[in-house]
Amino acid sequence: MNFAEWEPVYERILSDFGFDRAADEAVRDRAADFAAPFDLDRLDCAGRSVAVCGAGPSLEAEVSVARDADRVFAASTATDRLADAGVDVDAMVTDLDKNPETGLDRTARGDVVVAHAHGDNRELVETWLPRYDADHALVTTQAAPVDDVVNVGGFTDGDRAAFLADHCGAAELRFAGWDFDDSAVSGLKARKLRWAERLLRWLEHRRDERFPVLDGRRDEIERVWA
Image 1 (tube, rainbow, N blue to C red):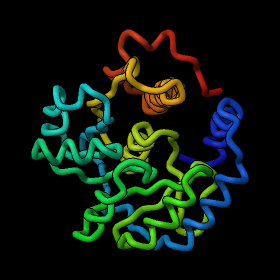
Image 2: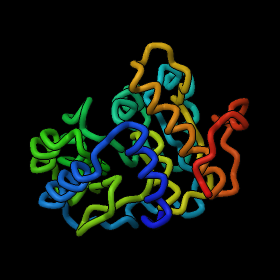
Image 3: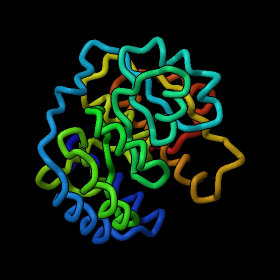
């Protein structure tokens, strides 16, 4: 994802939620203090299928999607639930707000964590990133990339995992644990899921691929691309 292409969508997200771009940039810069060069070839997905696993209630019922894929990129707590089901995760994608201890354990044993810095998680960034083994942590931002902090696109952990897989050359994206209409989530989380849906629709368009997770919803999703 080229930041120039991402920026107009990012600006719409900022406007919709009332987020502060300067805060995103400040936490990005702080995260850069703890980031190290990361070789994205470790997550090479060329010619491979990637299961993009959300942390919705359907995950356990759909775990075969992850078992059958060549690689697995998982959002935050989906990583723990997949581990409980005996499924290895290639990349845990997280903004550190739910299970940062899992990230700590992963980097300690050489597994990849994709840790996101944004305006609301400075304390988490400062608490956890210095404890992670930087050799196994890819640090991301939704603002402009700087130093060793990258922007691959995406807003929530789940759709950011999908954009990461695309960035790493995935031949096919498969989805498990995505529940856009989960009535148990907060109003804010429901709004974020609407954005995740829009961003997946954009990624689908960019890839000229149709994601079954959007079947029956596609025509009602607001278009975010020009």
